[in-house]
Image 1: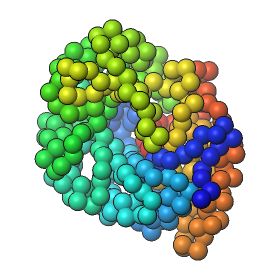
Image 2: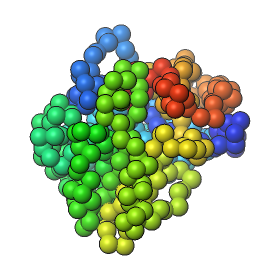
Image 3: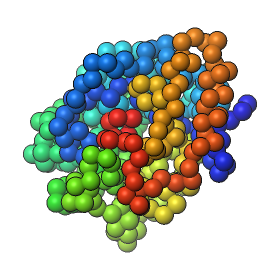
Length: 326
């Protein structure tokens, strides 16, 4: 097997596959003005998704995260899960969702082959949740998390973007919530993107400061698996739940990079903060193009950089996180 490997000996076992950039939330750190539709866009079809997944799986990828936008906005979302999960070589299928459809549909997603689920929840205060997301759906999302456990998920990961002056004072409430619940609470450091410079300056909270607090309180870091995402995960003997920290500004954050991204328009992105995407769509029309597709993936990896350039204030071509699946 010719694995996906770059010039720095990093292997890529993890694909983040966006299926739409449409989202019905208006989160301050992503789409504060809401989704602005472009009638010319044509998102990946189910067959194209199958071709992409097979090509990556044939080159060693064993985990796929289906992302957006909000992936459950796709009417065929359950079919997408089933198509990815049935691909030989794919051992784990995950998704990231804002949770608004979970209560009614998460059991179907589980039956279709979904193994893991991440839910965005930026506050435990319904009013602050509304302020950050632009949607008054806090109780629906919480009901969706409960429904995920009922459907058989042993753990639910909850993504929280901490922002100074908004929800950064809720750390204690979040910790109390996971003390007796199998939730991995993932604090995501606010990232600077092309349209969010002012928001970043106003609300950025250093993930390293939270890590110091956790270590002082007796939390211990888990060993990272080869196909794990970028989070540093911590556990505590007194807690059922865990804490994950995603700190893109930490030293050596990119050294363990193991994931590639394909946008909903069929472009390969080597980095969330890269300068360009490599078009794959012309090779997604038939299974007979798999060899050419794999060759293009290998050739593109030759240009992957050792690190992003966020520390220099360069966020690449990414206008907002919904554009290529975060």
